[in-house]
Length: 218
Image 1: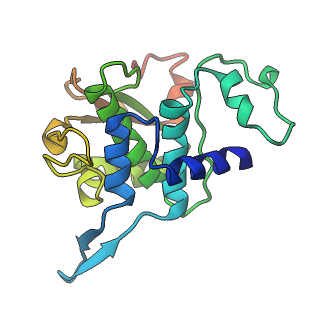
Image 2: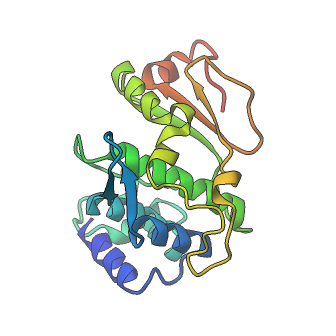
């Protein structure tokens, strides 16, 4: 939405005013710090998230932290098309949708949003976000691709998703990496479920089939 993009830009230019300390620290780490990552040959190369990825993450955090949207009625305030109405959506729960083209880095955006939700729930006393996540893919091919990134929580440590322990971003420092305790469960391979956090990865066909077979419970 064009109106939302303008408001997010103004919010970014104003140093994310109104966001939780955890959110500002993470945004600063992801998008305002220089990241040097090793390449295949051992040399170091600068890593930077694409602006579209940054804007997608910022939009979600802006809507949750700064605007504090609760439902579809709050979200409709940002519709500048005039073509959307509340009656088009049956659900009443809060839903954020990011639309990105193939190859623009949706998995990276997902890793950032997931980490943000996890730490927001952990560090912000009034947070109603989650540390348990259900990732649904459209088919097995996409599931296998995401599994490659998420196995061993690889993407969170290979990319600069997690700040180093003690990083504050001008706020209270936390042991970010030590506190990031998640278990990955893929399809029917459900491991010991943590109290601290879980990622359940499946595809849409399993969700549809669960109407007849109890294959996934979250």
